Structures are given as structure tokens and as C-alpha cells.
Image 1 (cartoon, rainbow, N blue to C red):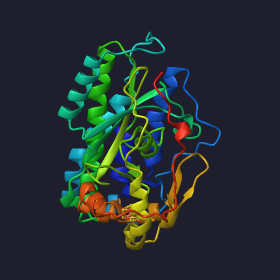
Image 2: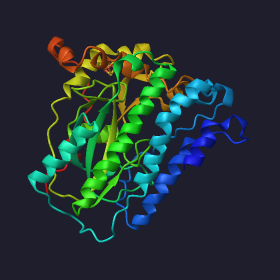
Image 3: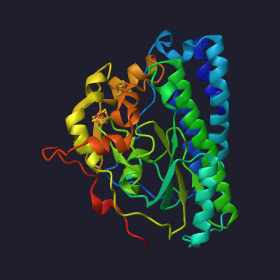
Image 4: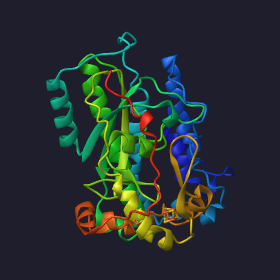
Length: 343
Ligand code: SF4
Ligand code: SF4
């Protein structure tokens, strides 16, 4: 897997186009070791491809200066190694199909998570329509957690500094997922980390269903802590009595979006729809992925939309305090019947 990454990173001399999707195939393949996987719903969408099919001189990652390459490797190598290690954390084969934990266990798990750098976390029973088409997950429940990306570098997007910060966010997700997975497995319960990059479920969708925040018009999760300056991680588990939250206090965010639309105006390639479209799987289609991906690949993994979002700039509480409501906002809700109850 690391070899594949270096082929991408140093790919200027290779005859093949670089493919991040091929790196992710490695982690997807490890899941086959589980034998049986929980399957997606018929209406599930496929995972969005990372490949932009551009000439190498247009791919910013292949044209870093030597100094930039060295700097990014300090995040990229631990990221890839931890994703590789995590994808092999199958654990033992004898876990019961479900397990119940004590409140003390949850307290210890959350303390570990916070100490490792988690900003917030919630729990969910994963709805099959959030599993990507042709993928599968080993356990029905999940811990969804966020890490923050610093404002200063993200504000410079699109730039090398911003892409480096995004990479740092992914690296933190991967390190934390492995720590929490090891803790859960050591206590005798099944756990398996979702990959920091890619993954087999729609983390943004899960983040909203779990009650962490709400999906903004840019298609990213907006939360009270970080606005949109965050990355989302997932750990699948067989623990059946997780304290799952069945309400979401953040859905007013989209009413604000309907009167803001700053990301729609500021996206350099107009990839964000004026109004999200229902996607057919319970989620919302907010951006034209192909248009975004081309610019994203050319321009240091563009993060303009998340940087300029008022929630990232002045913060969730300030926006909330100033917002007077928008009764005319179109309502896009991921259907509540998808939210499971405690079992
Ligand atoms: S920039 Fe405005 S419209 Fe776009 S996600 Fe943020 S709040 Fe919503
Ligand atoms: S990442 Fe950049 S190109 Fe893509 S939707 Fe956001 S602002 Fe537009």
C-alpha cells in the first residue's frame, strides 16, 4: 500500500496515471477477510472516485517542490501506514454477534478519544443506505468522531499549506481509529476502523444521522465546535447498547444555508448547486463531483468552500445567535426513519 502511494506521489516518471482509487482497493480488499459483510441498500450510491484523469503536469501533488514533498511526507507516511495497519485489525474471529458494555466502558472510551485528539463523537446503527454500493461493513454499529483542522492554514486554500493541514487531519483520524479499535478489542468486543481516506460508508451522512452536526450546502458536515473545518472518522463495532442519540439539534443550519449560499458564489468552478438535490438514497447531492474533482486535483485539494463558510469563520454559536430563522428555506432532511433506536 505504501509502495502504491509512493508510485502516486513520485509518479511523474511512471507511464501509468496515478490512482488514489488503487490505494483504497487495498483497504477494501482486507474487508473480504471477514467472510460475511453487512450489505448496502439497493438505492445506495457508489463511492465517489478520487481519480481526475488529468495530465501529470496538472496534478498539483506531483509538482510539489522538494521542500514541500519532504514536509508532506511527515503526514502522508504515518497516514498510509496507519491506514494499512488499521485495515488489518480484524481481531479474533470469536466475537459474539452483539455485545453490551457498561457506562464505565463508554466513559473510558470517550476519555481515550478526547485525549487522542477527538473533538466530538456520537454513536449510530449504520443504515444500509449509507454503505456504498458494492461495499460492505463487518459490524452493524459505529462510532463517528471528528478531528479539527486549524483555521490559519485552511484559510489560505487553495494552497500547499491548506492541503498539508488536510493531510494532517486525515493522519490524526487514522491514528485515533487504530487506538480506539485496539482499546475496544482488548476489552473483548469487536471493532474495526473505517479508513481515514475513502472508506466504505458515507461519513458525512452518518455524521448528520448520529447528531454530530448538519450537512451544509457545500455537502460537508457543520458542527458546533469546528464549523466545517473538520474531518470525520468511523469505527465499526458489535456493541449493541451504545448511547445512540436519536435527535439532531443542528438541522436549522440548512435554513441558514438557504439564505447564505456563500460557498455557491465563492466556489472557483461553480461546482456547488444553488440548491441541494435529493439523491434517492436518503442523502442530498450538493456538488457536481466531476467539476470539483478536476479543480481539487489541480489546486492542492481545494478547500475553499469549507474555509469561507461562516460556520468555519465566526463559529457555530455566533451564526446561531445572529440567525433570525428562514421560514421559506427548502427542507432537505435525511429521512428520520433511517435513524435506528436503541436495541
Ligand atoms: S457557506 Fe453558507 S451556504 Fe455554504 S455551507 Fe456554509 S453556511 Fe451553508
Ligand atoms: S472543494 Fe473547491 S472546487 Fe470543490 S466544491 Fe469546494 S470550493 Fe468548489
